[in-house]
Image (tube, rainbow, N blue to C red):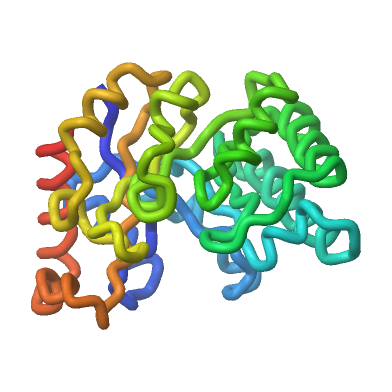
Length: 260
């Protein structure tokens, strides 16, 4: 049975060390890290910090900007490719098994192009070289995922299932049945189908019994991981607004227990 994880950012503006300590105290076994450059060299200290606290690092989330440029000719596409290549290299450096990446935006979707497919091929080849898993997340990207998995075959190329994106953007795609044999990671969160609210499971309208059943049929993964980043202006955020960080994490852990 999979153990429990939660993203290191869970909506409470605390120092990273305190966030990781509270995650461990709440009973979680693992965390996932944001791999942007906002904190400079600080990100390179976080994997070892998490491990000293007693948390495994399941994956890192690669930074994203104009992700659609990956599919377009020009310097922006090459720059984003280099960002993703650097993230894969850092995973190898820090002994982190998986890099989660975006290949399209959540809303606007580009065409599937040859230049984009060739760039993804370069990512896969580098992931193979570095022995890092490349997990592509579902955004507004189902045609791109279908094309990539049809053309490229690698044990290092897989899928990150985002429950909230599916429910909000492509509720009929059935991503877990479609790509479950390639599953490397999950981002579990809820919404009401109207926006990407990142609520705790069972506080939106996702049918979690169906998600549980489909997960059981997927490639086995070590951690069920929450990616909760509730928007405080969202009406549903009232469910959590008065909770301390410790109380919120306890509730989050209980929701994973219910799901599992």
